[in-house]
Image 1 (tube, one colour):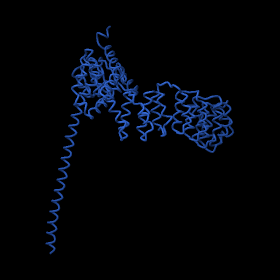
Image 2 (image 1 turned 135 degrees about the vertical axis):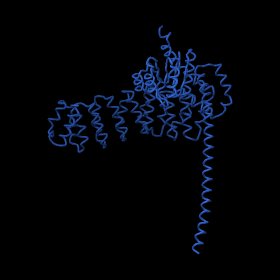
Image 3 (image 1 turned 120 degrees about the horizontal axis):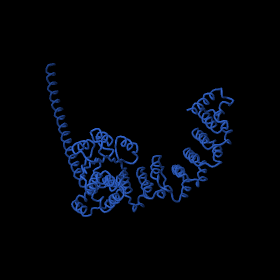
Length: 123
Length: 362
């Protein structure tokens, strides 16, 4: 599965990338919202994982742009900090499918991603 | 002669002008060189950090998944860099960021990485630094990385003259030991700021207290802020068992202590609490008097009606209004009582009563 990961903290980005690559996914990474949108159009990923707070375009703006640009069926997992409940609700209203609150376990993220993997989802 | 004077003046002026221009050009040149040097220096530092960024993210992310072979390889590659104290500090900063964002085994593996690379010693050394901000940073790093073995040194800093060092150390102890970490309250001589009290309460949010009896000692502390914080703790944990000790705080002369006592009593009253509050009404402070009358609204009964009726004739209109509100709540006739009052048609009572009626309608 092609997964686009947008996260501005480099260590988190690498950690998520490493975890998802271990699961056999093809991971495309970016550190800001603008780059995320560029890579979205270039690669048309099967799943998007995005942090909420990012330079240039926030996670909310990414969700709304993805949905506008024909990505209605692409599942989106949102990564948010503690105490951002309102933002998470807004993300769901815009079309996000799942969320994880920091601090989170990369293993848990891996399990959640499996739900959107075609073969796993049908089981 | 005047013509000669003019030409001399002209000569001097153009010469001075030349000198001024030369000085100006030299200054500009120097400024340009300084900017250039700074720009190159900044660029080199950024390039260095960028190169570190990739290596550090690789070190941390492999450590997160406990990939021993890859990790050892990366560490041996970066052995020289790990001797550089700037690189080590950069690594600590990134490890701390990662620790805040990850949980479970990933978080534990990051802690192991921090310890295995001896970065805890770097943080510990900061505790002995003369600069307060470095000291505070050291405490914060040790707290986030759960380095409980340094608890003795951190405990000593809970009464440091720097507020930030004190705050970080106190928060560190509560992070380590929850409620038991508050034992610094017994020795602290400095004021706990309102912000610090909120921080500590926030850290205690999901913590169940053990040995709550110790709070009785803190309620008698000579440090007023400790008494205030203890009252907040008693309210926060709904502790009925410390009621007599809290009641003793009503005799404290500090307004803030009295108001915090009132907050506790409003939340955890006994049958005779309202009467005791009325007895303490003589304390000469308007905010306190208003707080008592407002508290009666919640915990009072018919026994306080006479007292409240008396307050309706207080010289201060705010007290009249508060008393009328509580009366409309406690009086057997409820809000209708206001209409039957002898002065219901005279100002300021007429206006006050109308306001309460309007509030009830809303």
